[in-house]
Image 1 (cartoon, rainbow, N blue to C red):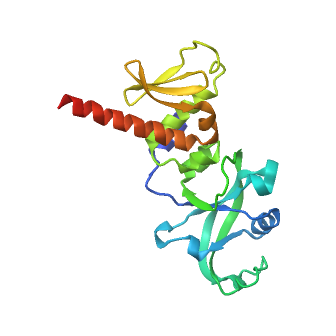
Image 2 (cartoon, rainbow, N blue to C red; image 1 turned 60 degrees about the horizontal axis):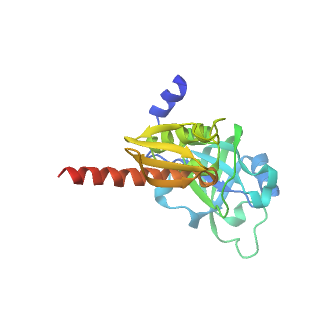
Image 3 (tube, rainbow, N blue to C red; image 1 turned 120 degrees about the vertical axis):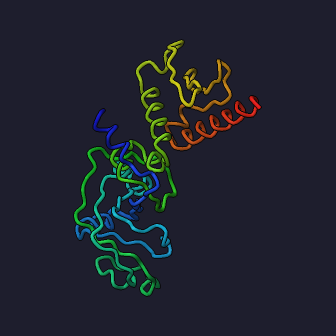
Length: 232
């Protein structure tokens, strides 16, 4: 726990230097892993996305089935803007030979200690940081934006996955920003002095933790603002 806290406090949440890119097929994954590189159409990246220091490979549920999720990542050694025809390891689709791509040469592909479970569809590419890559359980957690969001998500996971979460009257709850987050009847309640002002389905949290975390944080910020206004 102390090591985790030290790593968490060292995170610069403004830096998103891990590109998470989608694999189109097992064949593409095998070739990229074998030759230690990754490639993506240049139009999918902006100047503000750089520098990119790591690449993580996302394997969708639709294409990879039981092997879905994020399993491999690697440090970027070199990034080059090239024509698609220059990426000879993988044959280009007809008509794309002249298109510009970014090619990332990877030092080596490493395997995560625990694969990050795929919990979304239609994903193309996005950015995260190395801390979240190493400590996320499901892919939506990769998009958490602050330490506060991470801590809230961790508290929710501990509560939701606890053995007593579905037992009646278990009294399970924790504090967040001066409000109470509690659990009952398959729902997450956010309360102020015993009165619930927001609720979320636990099933929704399991599917998209990030969305629920952002929702709870937003509701608490709004409630906090109302508190301050009432004092004026």
